[in-house]
Image (cartoon, rainbow over all chains, first blue to last red; front, side):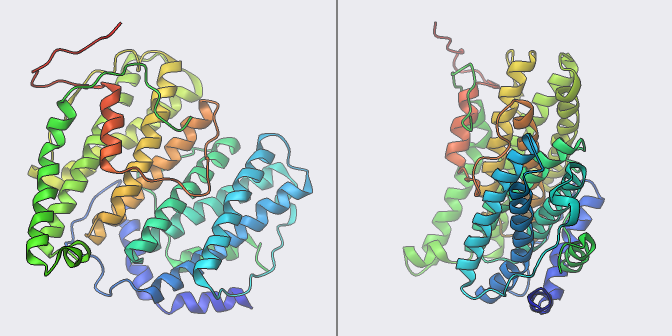
Length: 201
Length: 222
């Protein structure tokens, strides 16, 4: 129920989300091209938009926190992957707490079902890689819509998500940094990718 | 392991030469804003006008360009010398291509306003795997911290999106090389920014920027 309300909430400013996402996407497609437009978005960032965006990224942070928590608790993921689950899980929980405090009133978290992804190493790598890449790209697409104060905090989180993504990708044997410029994902793309994981009940 | 630990601790004025213009530019911006505003506090928090915003954005982009020049030159030289193998060689090759792409992007965006590429002398840092790892960890963590401090100051929405896209990639580079160097890819739940002064101090301490208009000879102690 709360996953749905989050979607509705995020959809309110879809146009502005998409504007940000298109820019990032164009960047990635052209290698790295710095387009020149003199000002930030026409509709000014505001506390309300900050809250919408934070609510939107909160669902990714909650998914990540639950995922690593369960993987660690199950005890079937061992060695460096277990260390990753511990360290990254700590970070994701800290991000969730921070955003929830900042929001004051956050939607209730959904229930998750990670299937084999928290017990089988190969499934763990694949799931972790997906949700970390989604996290980095969700933040990056929305960050230009934030107020300066919120942007400063988001910038401190997004690089940590990018470090997580690179770590688990390297562990999984895939390129930790596949692009010269990080692609951005629109809210629709993020929602579709989250749905596609099958982890949200 | 987060802080820069380079072997050579000498400084020269070349980087300062390269960015002195930027400092002057931003100081001029600040003064102009302060005069226009009705009071110092108002001026500090006022959104700059378009022209002022553009001037400041150019200064930020040029600052980022200097860091990208430094990184690109480093990885390019590493590749040319060819003393790395395996995962380290792969990392240096892929990351080097990214840093060169960043340089091109900033130069294209800045056009004639782009600062010139300084000359570099990396000493032995590009020659042994051990020194490469240590230097690369320092560069990548520094770049992440520098972009994190500068990005929120950018007024142009497009430049901001670009800086954030590069910022995340530098963080991926940092985690990658840290893991190859045997240290934790990520330290805290929130990464720390580093302001321009702090970044310049760290870069100057490496002595990697060769003096272009030599007024002083390099100082080697011991």
